[in-house]
Length: 353
Image 1 (cartoon, rainbow, N blue to C red):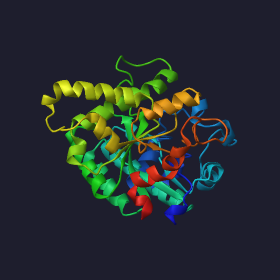
Image 2 (image 1 turned 120 degrees about the vertical axis):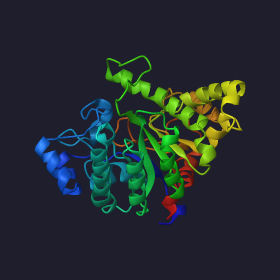
Image 3 (image 1 turned 90 degrees about the vertical axis):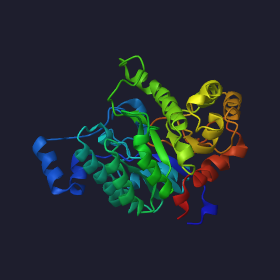
């Protein structure tokens, strides 16, 4: 593929695991028998209830109400429709919900092998993120090493809200593997539901859960910066997927302001968090949480103080925008090529392999 001819790189497309039966061929004998004997029917995460309106656009749903069930469907509805020449698959399945570390490892392996066989092998335009079992860091690193041999894996995928902030030292072997293989860390909206998704406790309604995701992203950003992850791993990039974008400038301004007053406790951070975030963090543009007013959108983007941070995503099949205008109104025309192509190619080095 000639990279200079690429029209768009879609950085967030979601394949749907149709059923547990789909994964059985990719489990070893022990775990296949376990699934059958225990009648485990699904690991679907409730972060995206299958029939909730936001989970899939109505025009993408099939007769059973599901969307994104096979490579040909995604190729037509996401790539052909919006003229994307490359799409990165982020498979959201309940691997992170499993308490048993060995079971989580088995299902992460099965999901990744299923993505290779049923998706990557069927459409040369597709790439994928490596689903890792964060329940056990050694298992996660093993899965990265196993999958990284296939250059079509271009990112490591974790959920925003787990058990522990991602900056903690226990996760650093994952970041060492990521840096070694030129794999960004993709942090996607979602929760392992070990703890409430809000700092106040469990919410009552789905809309509360959905809106609270940006608070989790703020905490993860602060953790990665303040723990010194990017000092230790200067080539690492973190991609915030489905985080929204308008929260970032205000939060980073606040983080940088307070860092100036209490930076003695984290002496390894020798430059402003604002600079670190501009160098190491990227955000997908869906959902773009701005009003429809183009002037407001343009001003919001100016606050990033960088043209390098936003990445195109359709968020297929989630319902984040209506119609066929993939670039939200108000994004300056001069940034379109950067968001659609240049920034994704710079963020994902393995796309050029």
